[in-house]
Length: 450
Image (cartoon, rainbow, N blue to C red; front, side, top):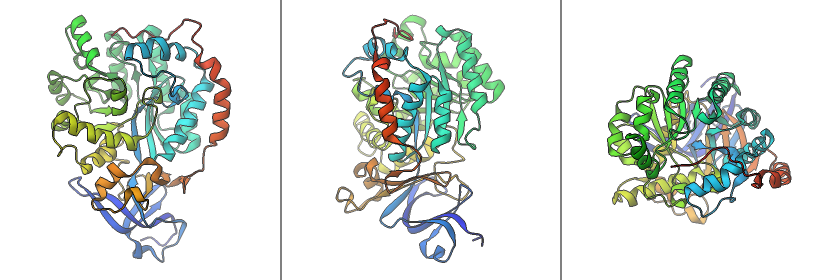
């Protein structure tokens, strides 16, 4: 242990750790030493009794976990939470969401991002992958509030080449921003809204500039069926033939991935990951879910996500973890899959890999950035603890998160947000709401024709 004071020491907690085979384990009565935003050591609480630190957190009765990662969301869409309910996908897009999004201003996006970041910090989310519009405003909020984010400016082919160029300019301008907490991606919306020529051009730009791609693809089975009827290929096959699978790509949802797509994903030239957001699939009554087991068998990481709150009503990744485990048991007919420890692996290392940060975050270990959440398990709904992994996945809730830390900086302490003023955001957003939700103009930013 070095003699200079540590920046932060967390003591007395149980720490979720990964062994050299990436198996989940727990170290009890442990301490975490943080220096310069990095975990310096995970050791016994007694070993740090005399070590000086700028800040100490007594975490007895709490579990320290790697910060949760929301691998696919549209954070500013919290402004539309509950505005498009109980609708099939096409009506949800065409009749409500895309007309409203034609009203979006940069201020709306900023306020939505502020509210979303507050919600995520309180739920133990330390990093999110966002795919939306007016993303300069989101980047500014991330820098201010202290979160980590993987950001991309979304575009459609209907906007012409300037949409793709704007996405590239955003990615290059903000890459490495917020003291390294912001990473960026090119963000074509989906194969049904971005044509093959634009996808191929995107792949070339990604290769040229060393950028990944974040895209919706095979979101549901209908999209895959329509793609086969119209073009004779699946959305995943479109990604293959346009070169998107030859660069690093994060695919949102993938509930329409077919068996014929799996060899293409397995043989992809780039790093491929999929983000699953199960609550929205249930809400839209989609007949299939992300094929997590099949993707696992070919080595594709599946990160946890919420999608936007307009469809999910929540940015609660803790809930996504529990739902992923339960839905996988149901769809595979096997109660042994997913186990609680497997779900925790998806919530930690697999989610970190999905957003391209597998060597940076996703575990509490020396050399990793100190993105840590402390969950209080002393409540009656989490006692007694016979299996800590099961307690975390199936009994604990996001509201049990007491403290959220990113890069060694405490963003929430004892449930109190330290970097965002929620009442002022809610007040200002409420004042803007009538203009935002007006659909009388008859416009929409895109058409959902699948």
